[in-house]
Image (tube, rainbow, N blue to C red; front, side, top):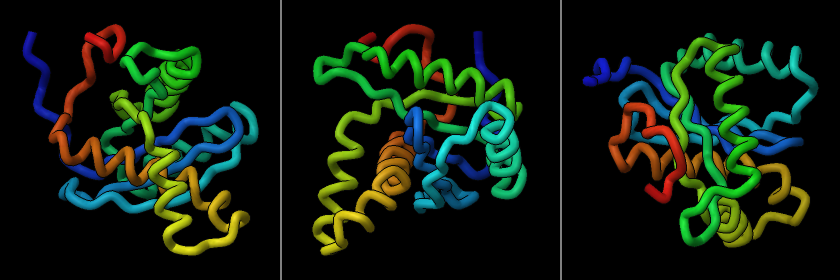
Length: 155
């Protein structure tokens, strides 16, 4: 089965967490990823309002949700939570969702923030959105624009 060509427009990278969600967005040409915000979750209705507003205001045509996987590529329990969130996000916003391996993004974000000589408090407030930016930049570099196949990343 051939998938339709991807809809052009901005992509949002999501560093999923149960308390905080890092969000980054691309430019319309899908070349540059920029950190946008760290969203503190507030319940199903508040989360739905935030992500619907994000999709509309930023003209998002694709969400990329990071999958935390083990070093050997097997999915973790948190991967299943991220997949569940991705399904919810797609149903809530009507915007397609793809999943992307996010190994090391938080560690890379922390290293970059330490190199910028930010205090621990400032690093913590920026870590999730920078991790989302790293995830989104890696995704954009692959040129992937269609949903990943069912199942895990180890495929």
